[in-house]
Amino acid sequence: MTIEDIRDEMSQKTCTLEPLGKTLVFHFDDESMLIDGTGEKNVVSLVSGESVEADCSVRMSTETFLKLRRREIKPFMAIASGKIKVEGDLSIAAMLKRLL
Image 1 (spheres, rainbow, N blue to C red):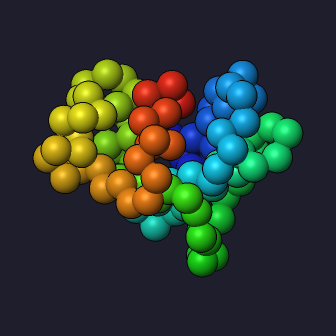
Image 2 (tube, rainbow, N blue to C red; image 1 turned 90 degrees about the vertical axis):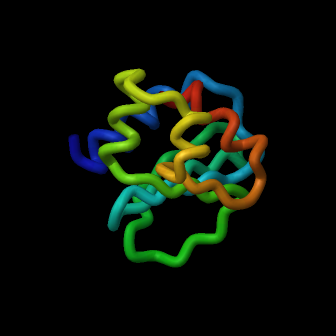
């Protein structure tokens, strides 16, 4: 699965949610993706190579993301074991479960 595939899936899922009211950036290995929920709808875009300020930043490998999607690991366990690192507004990171 490529970062573009992940972006496309996230776009489909976030369009069904109310706007987050904040920004969330995912860092997967060397790729980054921003969910901007500050407008009328959530907008997902690739921002690899850009310096992005966000309300919440989530770092994980693509492999960890795929394991979360397949329900092979739980978000809490991934955070506790250091496979996911979260900085900023944790209430936004709590929405991660709805995006998988």
